[in-house]
Length: 237
Image 1 (cartoon, rainbow, N blue to C red):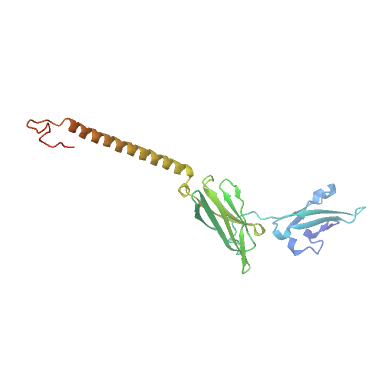
Image 2: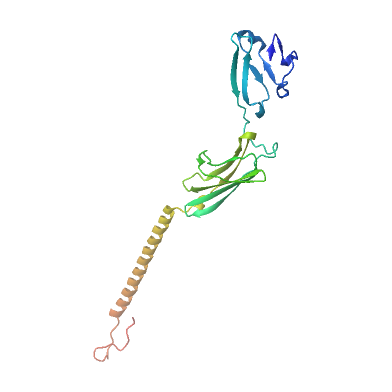
């Protein structure tokens, strides 16, 4: 309220709401130019809402409206707010040979937090949370399935816009958790290559063995005094 140079801040007028005492000011030198703006300092969530600027002495009377939206800057507020969501609990479960399932649980939070899985590059994984409401608190569970094509580093983020709270937990999925079909193919090729090579070696050894004994057989020394042309000594095979 401003009227004939008296206003709330100089105690010339009474009736200012306790919520705004000591935090609202105007631009005295700008009034003559039609600037009736005010400044609200140290804003809080409760300051948000619809405001009207009323000029009762104008002809015709004029009223202007403006909406003030106040949001907290998001940060970890666990020390200053007992209802802030705790740090998410995250773990991984092997799903298939080339997929891993990531679990995230945010227990006992109020107001209800928004829970998201994000990659390290900021991409969000679409997933439907499981919500349990018990004892005036929310328990949120969020599951996603990732593959080796993803970045390997993931964040589960819990946000409570109403109180300006955000907190996250990260988990890294090692490459060894994934067994790609390409790797299996390489192992298969190596196995067959080894099998063929080994078979070739065995075959060569067999040939050498037979050839060696064949040479021994055909070159066995002949002796005199044989009966019917047969050697008196047995051949070694």
